Length: 258
Image 1 (cartoon, one colour):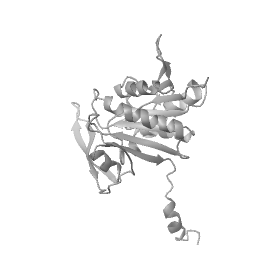
Image 2 (cartoon, one colour):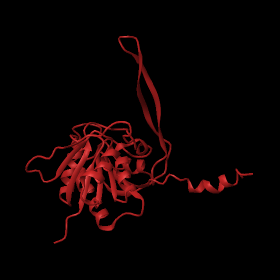
Image 3 (cartoon, rainbow, N blue to C red):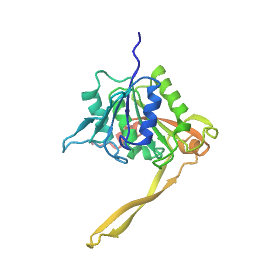
């Protein structure tokens, strides 16, 4: 009898997040699920790892559960590292991260704990996908996203991914009837125009809240932002090799060793 694929599920919103519960539900239809997720929200942590303090790992599995659940005191990237090295008895066939409460399209991929967990799995040679829904609400409706998540995950298990490639999947906050389908896209060139809201404590000490507005500078029709605006699930293949290969020859022309 063929073994079910082993699927590692993680996120950055924490082990109690509704998006994680939805992702677990979908993955249980596909394979054997093990969950290792942060014990508290870790949004915006990027690819941070814990070096100067201890990590705790607690099993939360209850009697009768169809899958094992662990919470970690670490970051999303820590969760994948500790899952691979301390929890799983074999290399997972797939790692899925999410479903994030909020967008990880465009430049957000750089800051995303959701995507950093998926990228950490990719570094280990595990096919990996980060899923995000464009709704920051804790009680967001994840139901319309389920068929798309299941389809994409099943296809990755069947076909694999190109070497060192991870999928960044963003889903519009629309009803099932209004979702148009799936588009393979490139990352839009966009950024956050940031400012700090300066305030004071009752004791007179200054403190700051980071705020800002998202600005899309890219009018291309092939971007994730364009696809999402038109009601499509946006799938962007990303990689962790950050080398700007096109710039190597130009820099060689600087004759740095002369």
